[in-house]
Amino acid sequence: MKQILGKLRRAATDFNMIQDGDKIAVGVSGGKDSNLLLKALKMYQRFSNEKFDIVAITIDMGFKEYTPEPLIEYFKELDIEFKIVPTQIGEILFDVRKEKNPCSLCANMRRGILHDTAKELGCNKVALGHHLNDAIETFLLSLFYEARLNTFSPVTYLSRKDLYLIRPFVYVYEKEIIGACNKYNIPVVKNPCPANGETKRQYMKDLIKQIEHDIPFVKDNILNAITNIDQLNIWDKEKISKICKKD
Ligand SMILES: Nc1ncnc2c1ncn2[C@@H]1O[C@H](COP(=O)(O)OP(=O)(O)OP(=O)(O)O)[C@@H](O)[C@H]1O
Image (cartoon, rainbow, N blue to C red; front, side, top):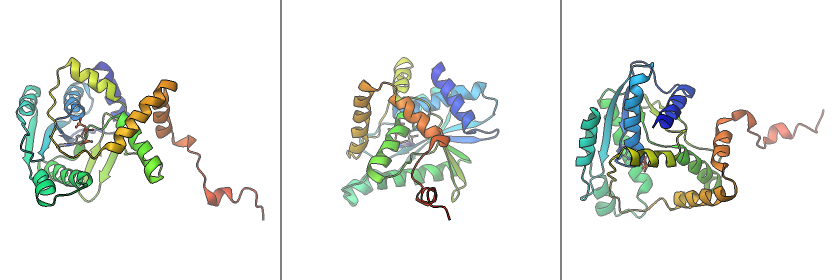
């Protein structure tokens, strides 16, 4: 956990994520990443120079098998204000609209409700559990499937809602999160979604694992590439076309 907190502090400092007086809503899905993020932020709160508040928000996607009780216990144990928002997203997408590809619509609806709830609770920031593996996978997915050099940002400002999204785990590897969750017995309560829309991401995970056999430091190198803007060397047609042509 010390290592994770060190990385959280480094990300918070590098990207100026947290300021005095912030009220941060942690989006807690019940999965390992955001559950651990909640605990890590709570610990960080104690030694951070900035004074800030935390509240946990969980969007209940409305699946029948969902049991939030272990999460409620976890929030109480951490002594964190929390709100579980009941929704019918699952029912709307699967039973009413019978969506064939529900994942992006589902994520959009979930995000909207998360952001609105954060505002209602007086929060100015929303913290999400995305980690370094997510950033790297997203980077490769964008490159391979969308022809873009792109990944999500550690900090995003949503001007329409006047809300900041922060991702304090951007320097933390998934392996470290799994290790800490096992060590600290962090409860995991996944929203039981019947869709499996993340096949491309799984493909990317597997691909990175394969590459790591031959290039063990490949993830570190991708991180360095993502964070070092000075080495960005891509073909700028306008600039390059002027190099030889002197008039
Ligand atoms: N139902 C939800 N309620 C609140 N926040 C959520 C919910 N689902 C996702 N989030 C937030 O969005 C982030 C990214 O969502 P995603 O579904 O990609 O999670 P994940 O990578 O499986 O991580 P986790 O292990 O936290 O579920 C989560 O880490 C969490 O902060």
